[in-house]
Amino acid sequence: MAEPEQTLHFRPFAIDLKRQQLLRDGELVSLSPHLVEILGYLAANRGQTIGKDTLLDRFWPDVNVTENTLTRAIADIRNALRDNASSPTFIQTVARRGYRFIASVETSAAAQADVFADWDKGKLSLELLDARQLENARGSFERAIAVTPSYAPAHAGLASACFLQFERTRSENIPQRDVLERAIAHARRACDLDPSLGEAWATLGFTLLAAGQLEQARAAARQATALEPTNWRHHFRLAVATWGEERLRAVDRTLSLLPDFAQARFLAAMVFVARQAFDRAEDVIQKGAARQTQEADADDLLFPSFGLHWMHGLMLLRRGEIGEALRAFAREIDTGRQSSVYYPEFRLNAIAASGYAHLAADDADGAVRAFREALELQPANGRALIGLQRALLRANALSDASQILHRVEDAVAALRKGGRDAEAAIVRAAAESASGRQDAAIGTLDALLTQAPPGQVGWQIPIDPALADLRTHPAFARVLTRVAARAS
Image (cartoon, rainbow, N blue to C red; front, side, top):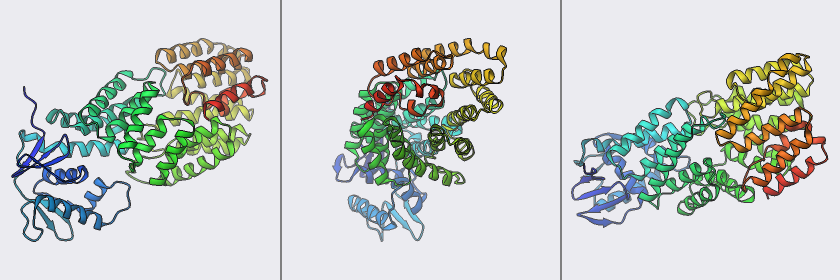
C-alpha cells in the first residue's frame, strides 16, 4: 500500500507537512517553517474559529509576546497567500476572537486533517508530565504517524512518549528497556526525515543518554541548540546530556530564556554537589525548591518541578541539621504532583532518605518505619534494605536484620541485570560500609569511578547518607577528589 500524501491542498496552494513548506502550483513560496506550521494548523481545522490565546499558547509557548506578534504573523501569511484581509479567500478574521480558515481543504486521506490535532494533543500530554496521560499521548502520535508516516514531528513526539514511559521505571532495579529502544528508533527516524528539526535531535539526545550512549547523546543535543538557539527546551536537554562546565553553561542559557524553570537549577546543583561547592549548591537548590513549593497548588502546570526538596534535604542532613532535613523530605512528598511521571521516584527517595535522617538522630524505631514504608513502594530497593538492616541492628532485632543480607545481594544482581551498574556499585559500597568493611567499600567506589565514562556518575557520593559512615575514612577524601575532578 502506498503511503498517503503528506500535503494539505487549498488550490492553488499546498502545505508539505514533512518539510513545513508552502507551495503554489508546485513552486516554493517564501514563508518560514514557523509560519507554515501556523497556516497548516488553521487549514487542518478548516471552518473552526481558532482563538488568539490558543494560537499564542501553541506557537509561542513560554514566550512573553503580545497579540501584535500574532497579528504580524497572520499578515505575513496572508501576504504569502496574496489574501485580502477585508475580503478573504483563505483566512478570515473573527472580530475579538481569532481566525478561521475558510477555503476548501483537500487531503489524500480523510484522516489526514486530524494529524495536527493528534500531534497537538500528544504534545500537551507530554508537557504536563502526567503519567495518566502517557498512553493517550502515545496513541495520538501513533495515529498521526499512521496517516503521515513521514511526518517527523510525530515521530519525535512518539519518541518522547516512549521515553517518559521508560522514565517512569528508571528508578526500578530493572527498567523497561524495550520502550527506551523504541523511543530511540523513532527519534532517529525523525532526524532522518527532517535533519533541520531541532526537536528531533533534542529528543534523540535524551533517549541516547538514558541508554548510556553519552557521546552520541551530547552530539545530538548540541545539534538541536545549533538549529534552534532560542528554544529553552533544547538548552535544558543539552544540560541533561552534558556535565561540568558545559552543563552549567547550558543551564544558564535555559534560565536566561525561562527564568522560573526550577528543574534547570536541579541540574546545576548536581554539578556543585559533585565539586563539593556546597554553598553554591544550596543557594541554587533553595531557589528551585521555593519554586517547587509555589507550584504545588497550580493545576495543569506544564513541566512541573520535582526532586528539589529531596536534594536540599540531603544537603541539610550532611551538615547535621536533621530536623530541617526531615522537613525537606516531607515537603518533597507533600508538594510533588502525584500524577507526575517522576513523583513515585522522588517520593521513594525522600522516604528512604528520611530513614537515614532518623538513623542519624539515633531514632531506630523511626528509621525502621521509614525504611519499611520505602520497601512497600519498592520491595527490592537496595538503599532502603541496607538502612533497614542498620535500623534493626540498633533496635536489637538481630534475627530480623540477619534475614536482609541476601535481599541486598539480590538487589545488586537485579540492578546489574537492568543495566544500572553505577547504582549497583554504590549500593554494594553502602552494604560493605554498613557491615564494617570500609576498605572494601572505598575499593568499590574507586573501581566505579575508574570504569565509568565521563559524566555525572557518582555525583551524589558527597551527600549520600547511605555512605555517611565512610566520611571519616582516610581514603574517602581521595574518592571525593575524583568525583570533583569529573565535574570540572
